[in-house]
Length: 82
Image (tube, rainbow, N blue to C red; front, side, top):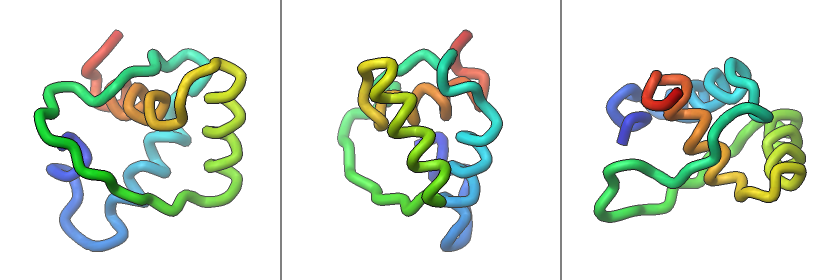
Protein backbone atom coordinates (compact mmCIF):
# COMPACT_ATOMS: atom_id res chain seq x y z
CA UNK A 1 0.00 0.00 0.00
CA UNK A 2 2.86 2.37 0.80
CA UNK A 3 4.27 1.85 -2.68
CA UNK A 4 0.95 2.13 -4.50
CA UNK A 5 0.26 5.54 -2.94
CA UNK A 6 3.61 6.82 -4.19
CA UNK A 7 3.25 5.71 -7.81
CA UNK A 8 1.07 7.25 -10.48
CA UNK A 9 2.27 6.04 -13.87
CA UNK A 10 3.21 2.71 -15.33
CA UNK A 11 6.83 1.97 -14.57
CA UNK A 12 6.88 4.12 -11.43
CA UNK A 13 6.65 1.07 -9.17
CA UNK A 14 9.75 -0.55 -10.66
CA UNK A 15 11.66 2.73 -10.47
CA UNK A 16 10.66 3.24 -6.83
CA UNK A 17 11.54 -0.32 -5.77
CA UNK A 18 14.87 -0.05 -7.60
CA UNK A 19 15.60 3.23 -5.79
CA UNK A 20 14.71 1.67 -2.44
CA UNK A 21 16.85 -1.43 -2.94
CA UNK A 22 19.80 0.71 -3.99
CA UNK A 23 19.44 3.07 -1.01
CA UNK A 24 19.27 0.60 1.89
CA UNK A 25 21.79 -1.89 3.25
CA UNK A 26 20.03 -5.23 2.70
CA UNK A 27 22.30 -6.90 5.25
CA UNK A 28 20.94 -4.64 8.00
CA UNK A 29 17.27 -4.40 6.98
CA UNK A 30 14.79 -6.08 9.31
CA UNK A 31 13.07 -8.76 7.20
CA UNK A 32 9.31 -8.51 7.74
CA UNK A 33 5.93 -9.21 6.26
CA UNK A 34 3.62 -6.49 4.98
CA UNK A 35 2.22 -4.27 7.73
CA UNK A 36 -1.46 -3.43 8.09
CA UNK A 37 -2.58 -5.44 5.08
CA UNK A 38 -5.87 -7.29 5.33
CA UNK A 39 -6.14 -8.63 1.82
CA UNK A 40 -3.04 -9.33 -0.19
CA UNK A 41 -2.63 -9.41 -3.90
CA UNK A 42 0.47 -10.46 -5.74
CA UNK A 43 2.49 -8.02 -7.79
CA UNK A 44 5.29 -9.05 -10.08
CA UNK A 45 8.13 -6.58 -10.49
CA UNK A 46 10.94 -7.08 -12.98
CA UNK A 47 14.12 -5.86 -11.33
CA UNK A 48 17.41 -5.19 -13.06
CA UNK A 49 19.41 -8.44 -13.11
CA UNK A 50 22.15 -7.16 -10.79
CA UNK A 51 19.64 -5.94 -8.21
CA UNK A 52 17.68 -9.20 -8.35
CA UNK A 53 20.90 -11.16 -7.84
CA UNK A 54 21.88 -8.96 -4.89
CA UNK A 55 18.43 -9.34 -3.28
CA UNK A 56 18.40 -13.11 -3.82
CA UNK A 57 21.95 -13.61 -2.54
CA UNK A 58 21.35 -11.52 0.58
CA UNK A 59 18.06 -13.31 1.30
CA UNK A 60 19.80 -16.69 1.04
CA UNK A 61 22.68 -15.55 3.27
CA UNK A 62 20.22 -14.32 5.88
CA UNK A 63 17.85 -17.32 5.52
CA UNK A 64 14.86 -15.08 4.83
CA UNK A 65 12.60 -14.74 1.82
CA UNK A 66 13.24 -12.15 -0.85
CA UNK A 67 9.73 -10.83 -0.18
CA UNK A 68 10.41 -10.33 3.55
CA UNK A 69 13.65 -8.55 2.75
CA UNK A 70 11.96 -6.30 0.20
CA UNK A 71 9.14 -5.50 2.66
CA UNK A 72 11.69 -4.56 5.29
CA UNK A 73 13.60 -2.37 2.84
CA UNK A 74 10.41 -0.51 1.89
CA UNK A 75 9.47 0.05 5.52
CA UNK A 76 12.97 1.24 6.41
CA UNK A 77 13.12 3.55 3.39
CA UNK A 78 9.90 5.25 4.41
CA UNK A 79 10.88 5.43 8.08
CA UNK A 80 8.36 2.87 9.33
CA UNK A 81 10.88 0.92 11.39
CA UNK A 82 14.14 1.46 13.28
